[in-house]
View 1 (tube, rainbow, N blue to C red):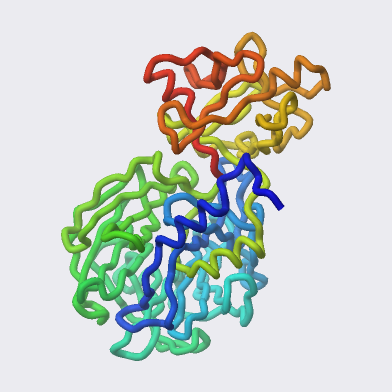
View 2: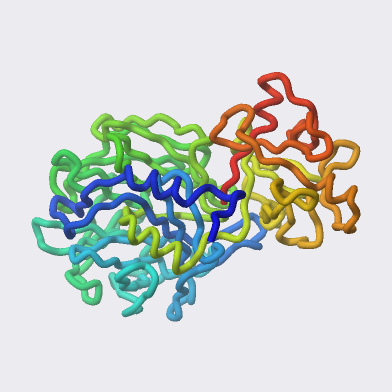
Length: 459
C-alpha cells in the first residue's frame, strides 16, 4: 500500500526514531537489555466547557518527547471500574522486569472534597493490555492520595510510591510507601516536607549520583535534590519556573543529547502544557522552550512521560492507530490553532470548546486529488473554502466552483520549510494566511505574511 501524501512519511518517522537510541535505566540498575528510542505519554482529558473531559487513561506516543500522536482517536485505553470510576494524574513506570505499572489518583472530575485513601493500579506488559486492576490503600489518614508516582530504590530493593497528602503538619506534603509488588505497602511516612504546602512530586533518580525532586509550590515548579532517596533527605535548591499558575511537573531526558525537559501544566485554563529545558539539572535553572517546537495531545491534562523502544512505539501505533484527524498550529502564534467559529475560519488560542472545531480531515482535493481539502470533523458535510478571499465553512454543493474554492496545494512552509503552507487551487498566487486571526487567501511577499501563511499539521 502506498503512503498517504497528506501525512508525514512513516519512513521519515522511523528514520528519526532510529537515531534515538539509548540503554534505559531505572535508578542505577538497568531494567533489561533493550534500547529506548521513543516516548509514551499518559494523561486524562479536560476542556474548558467539559466537552472533551474524560477521566480514563489516555496514551500518546512521540519520537522526540515534543511532538505527540494521540492513540485510540484520543479516547481512553482503559477506565477505572472501582472507587469514583475515574482517574486523574496517571503515572507510568517501567518496572525492573521491563513491564509497566500504571498508577493514578482515584478521582473523577474536580470534587476536591473527596478524600480517597486509595490509588488505582494496573499492570501491563506492553501498554496494549492491562491486567491486575485494583485499588491500593496507602494510608488511614482523613486526607487524599493525589498524583501518585513510583521509583525504584536500589538501596532498599523496593519501589517507593510518592504522593501528595495532608499530614499532621496541616499542609500537603509528599508522602511515601514502599512495596515490592504494588499490592501490599509499608506504612506511610513523610518523604519531603519543606514546611509549606506542596503537591505533585516528580523524581529523576540517579543523575550523576544525585536525585532530583520537582514539585508544585504555590503556582510554580520548584526543585529539591539529595544524594540519597531517604525520606527527609531532600533540600530545595532551584529557581522557580512557571507560566501562569503551573503544576504537574514532568522531568524528561532527551535520548540524543544532554538536554533535560521540564514540562508543566497550567491549571487555568484547563491544562495548557509548557516546557523548559536545561543541559545540567544541578544548576536548577531552566530556559523556556519555543512553543513552535512542541505540541501537547489534544485536551491532555497532568501527564506522565516514559521512554519506550521502537518496537513498543510501532506496536502501540498498530494497536490503537493514529488519529483520523489533524490540527493546524499557527507558526507565528503557536498557541493558536485553525478552527471554525460561526462558520468562519480563524486561529484561536488553545484550549477552547467545542474543541472539535479545530479538528480537520485533510482529504484529497475536491478539484484535484493531488491537492488537499479541509473537511470539518464536527460538520462533515462542510469544508473550508474561500469566498471573497475569506475562508468560510460551507456545505459542499458539488459544484465545480465549490470544489475549486475548497482545494489547496500543500507546499513547504513559506516561513519554515519543515512546516506547511497552502496555495489556492484557483488563485495560485494566493495562500491561506491569518490576518487579525481570521483566515483568508492573499498574495504573500513580506516575512510577516510568510509567517502568517505557515502552519504545522499535527494532532
